[in-house]
Image (cartoon, rainbow, N blue to C red; front, side, top):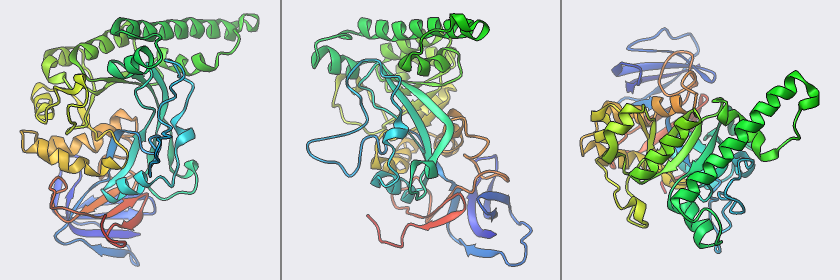
Length: 392
């Protein structure tokens, strides 16, 4: 067993201990409190003056699918730019445990990240969550049952297909139609599968692409819909409600323009990147005040850096949002328990509670200060010393 003691323990479970103790048994949290019963022979790590938090979670990255270190010319695996609908591709097939973005995220206090296809396609394929621990194969790090389907609105699919390939979708109308068509076909195929279960003679010919969309239209697989501009967000919600999808809006850059709409439709948002430059029209409206406005409006959101190794900078950008009105409590939730809920993993992680995975981060000070270092990251009970090999 391992005892962590004397740290400021931010449990994200309703209580913070100024000098708390966390007892780890193997890969699970055994107990937490101002004092805990310590069995004989327990190893102790004195964290006086440090902060101890749940391991951070970034619910929207492209770690490993946007390969690092990169090459020139680029050979990124994140976008299968061969068809607007590639529901059949899986991020796990591009998840490399030796990608440098994984270590960079771990050294920054992230114990879990979600990675997936990019937004070049209307339907980009299936993403997956993974632990940031060292592993030899994807089986060592991937978290089964956390697979979600990627969809995208706006400029990226229009550019890739309408501009570069001179084919549909060329317009926002065409993009929405491509998405609806895929979902209509998946619904029909789903019904055919159900009839085939009752009468094998009616069983349809298997469809490699539609097979992956059946759980989507049955509400069994969450959809992650990329949408920056306010009107794209509204279109995404309209289509999601049309087909009764379990969904979240990714980026939600101009969401502050439609707060009442997001609240009325109970939209879950994954907000970020938080410090994008105006590189394309639909993100000209990016604001660091968006998280505070969402909090005030009662909109549920997580925070993301939407990058590869850039995930390591997310805590600093969260600090910039705190300076602009976001509460510290919500800031902690937005990178711990809220993304855990979004990923369907809240029973295992996202807070410091008995029985949860021993995924923790040790900080030299407030995690959202640019003067703070994440000194240790603990994943499944294994302690990684982030200062051991120097700082990047």
